[in-house]
Image (cartoon, rainbow, N blue to C red; front, side, top):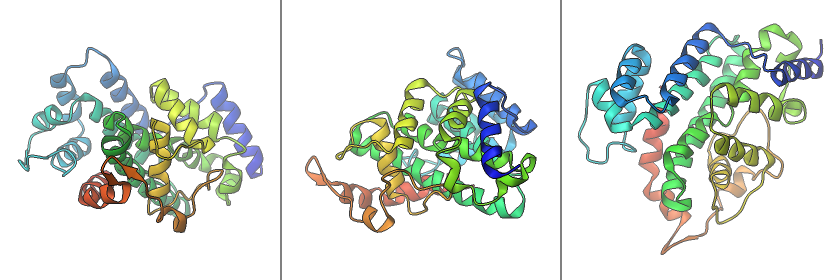
Length: 277
């Protein structure tokens, strides 16, 4: 089976809702289902997070990051971390865990691609959170979550490469034309991503933008442009080159985008570092 046939087969399966996740991902999806339940109180969330040692450690680490610890007061317990972050940020952390799990069992060649894709994802998520809070004034927690899940379809595709040997060749040229929208949307649905976030990710896939940015989709696009590590999967239609991205600037109130990015550099680096753990 060649690469195009593999893309089409996986897309057709996704279109029918037939998604094959590793066992570890299935367990994390169940955790995500519990967290999105409107009756999930922070104390319940703390018990759920505490049951996974890796996720518990990451939760405490992100709660102590510059982005979430503005008082500079460190905490050491999962319960305190959950109370500081809130359930919505925990949903982002679980989504990040799911994405990492999808790329964790790949062969060496694809593992390197997955690690680069995750580095890109973490940069976009960290930048989107800051851009949302300081520039577009959309909800920063939602922007963080959207940044984490915007490439989840690509991670799912990589996770299926062992079942489709022809897929492991250079797949970037065909990803947009043969599966991103179908596979990406179905995987986002499996992760219970809210529809308004899905629409923002789809706007990013299409490359629709406004400068200065206004919407969640604009926030993602700008973060994607500014991410120092580009996605290894594809170049979006009309994507900004790395050279041009370094020149993006515009007025924001009494300041500029570049001034905001300079002021927020440590914050972005801290959040990116935690997501890379």
